[in-house]
Image (tube, rainbow, N blue to C red; front, top):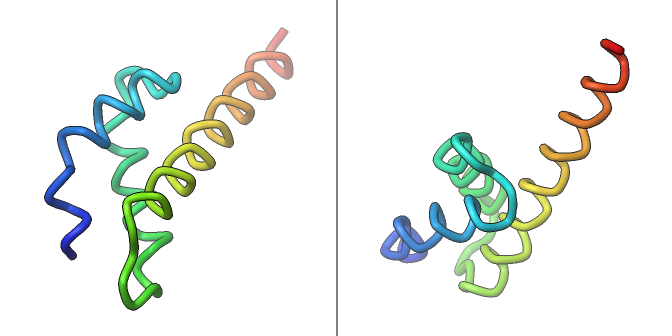
Amino acid sequence: MEIARYHKEWIVLASKLGGGMWAEDLVQDAYIKILDYEKPTKALMFYTLRSVVLNNNRTKKARIRQTK
């Protein structure tokens, strides 16, 4: 997958978007989501990664609220 050339950049981006120490895992999740596309673009990866990170943050917040 040609998009994987930017792997380190994706990790930095995921971390800056709020992925923290889970950035690498979130990037891997985004790769899995775009596997079905014949020729994924950087824009597709960006939006997919952003969605994965934001969804992860939402579920973390929901879990924290449930434990209180």
